[in-house]
Length: 189
Image (cartoon, rainbow, N blue to C red; front, side):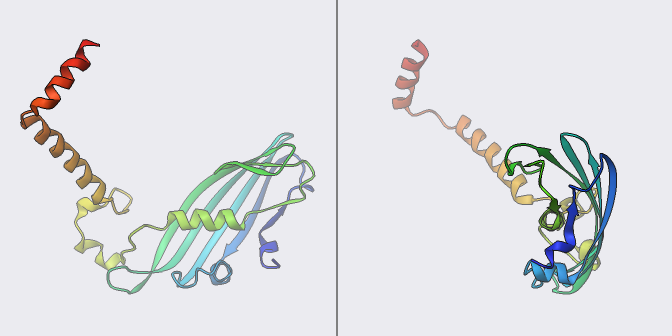
């Protein structure tokens, strides 16, 4: 718990307006979340910009840095660059609850918000499903990647192609005479 206090923002003391906070994410951060098995190092700076109004807190996260990962193909370690922005809204209300993945309700007397879990989730979601060392990107079909260098899920494309071929084969097959009688009854209604 003591570690998490480093990621608290004392909102009760903030005046209405814009405020900026900076947090460092390193190996200790991932050790706390027991993710040191798949993270080989981290050098990330998170800038949190808070815009406080009477009824809402708009919180913008700018996450920039590198995350040490292990290649799924070669098992070599490499630094994966991260650069992302996320937005979360905290609304004031009668109870503390999560309304959606990016909207939370807090009470007026909430002294602080902790952003550690949000930062962890944003970083986790930014990691590609298939981690490929930059030296091996040339060996993979370029069609497998989008403009940003993220791997496209080929299984989805193959499923879509399979669905199309199933529809074509069903149209080519003559209908079973037993079903034709039922189809005629259906058309009468």
